[in-house]
Length: 497
Image (tube, rainbow, N blue to C red):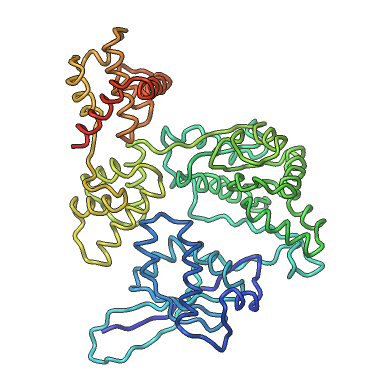
């Protein structure tokens, strides 16, 4: 039989959405609390959540939640187990809070209804209310927000997640420069040449973890430091709120009074001319005062679209460091670290299989591990290599999740071009050998998760620029040479069999 426990989680925010606005958005009134209304409301929440997690995480966790009721101030969501609730609270409480606050406003509550296994003969379903506020406590209103009192001392909410530290950030070749610079800034904010520090790279590689680790270390060493974490979107919204509340002087004093500012996702400043102008002057004031500025982006500053050139120029004053997808060894280390945090000892073959086949981002690796543990814990499955293969197959959308190695590529290409494998690493410049080597490098980049440096190491220790040149050469051949185009097609099919 089933028993349910009801757990309350109070959302927190700096912006409150008026209840009337929520009602208007939902197309409902408090008197009309039917299931279609709560499902519509929850569907809006899911739209936001879907954009912030991987597809596998969304399917494993959030699709299993069921909206039960909404009374105008409290949304009740059913989850299938206590473990499920604890996992959501540990890993996604911040996302849930931000989603609820965006849809419902700061005074709304999120309540979990947890289904419990019950073996007793009593067939009635009971509900137990437990404190559920495990996430970040509500922050006081900022001095320039509409609900702040007129006389309000400036308060600096840091918004840093205490779980993001240097100690649990896995360092590898893919993030070495960014990590070294981040640690230097954390140890001596505003006093290094890395001001601003701009960290860029594709989503899901750990940029937010790294910059939040900076803030956490600074606050750990100096609890009186004014360290602020924000995003370009939050900066924009708070700027708009300050204009509407006629509190521009408070807004300006607030942002220019910090010791360290971290702004995530600066690419979203694109096209917002007035916000860019305000950020430009804020940046100048902080930089001239010797304060530390830390920024993240999904691309290099010079590639930012619709961003003022004077801002781009300032973003390049300090250090611009990139983060790349992790190599195999780093992925193994990440999996070992995450499994240790969850108290699970993954078998070596399971670790290696996931690390070899899930490589596009750290977030995807975590999503695979979460899905695997969910199947073990929730479905009672045995933790085996076959189960790991099933999970990986679902994440990668691969029918067989074939593992192709550099040795496979060398063997296939050398046989096709009738060259000795050893010659592929030699320094000869014979055309037939060079072509075979370039083909190997191109296929390795396309069909494996190896870094350019790792690929080059398998061909006589050549550097990453040689690998890039080889790949470009093959691409040029594909565009102009029918025979090479056929070679590529044949070899790809042969390797995928």
